[in-house]
Structure formats: structure tokens, C-alpha cells
Image (cartoon, rainbow, N blue to C red; front, side, top):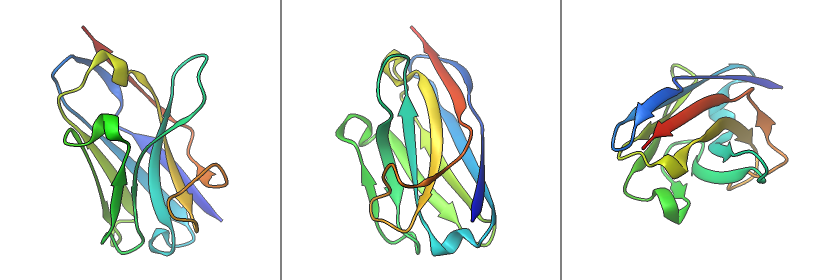
Length: 120
């Protein structure tokens, strides 16, 4: 079992940047593919980005390509999501996911989420 704790959310103006972190404990996070998802009120949780166990492969939803970058530091058991050029449409609760599947899906282990609010 792996436990995930997200941090780094907050309020930012459109065009600004935030970096989310996901700290993993329990089973070594390097044995999992990792991902970020987001949810807005009334909508299903949406896939955002994923990174493979070694970090050699990444995958993004089209709406964030060129703006968001996922990375990981297996020595620190931490995954990051660098978010640049933020838009009001990026406002959501962001969740970290750990999975044996590629890309991570709904059967993942989940963190508690961190709120990102982008003002126009």
C-alpha cells in the first residue's frame, strides 16, 4: 500500500504558475506509475498527466500539453506537476495517483487532493 499527500495548491492569477508536489510513503513509489488528475464540481475526475516508473515516459491530456510538466524524483519519493500559463479552466481539485497500470486510471491509489484556483 502507498500513501500519497499532495501540496502546493493555491490561488493564482491567469497566466501564473504553480508547482504541485505529491509525497509518497509506504511502498516505494518507484514501483508505481504516477499521475495527476483533477475534478471540478459536477464533473467526473479528469486525467491530466502521467509519468512512468522510471520517468522515461510521460503522457498528457491535450488541454495541458505545452503548459504542464510532470516529473518525479524517486530518491525523494515525490512527483511534481509544474503548471505554467494557468487558465481559469484549470481551476479544480488536483489529485495524485499511483498505479501499476499505464497510464494510471480509476483503480489507482489516491491522495486527498489539493485545490487550485485560477482567477481571471
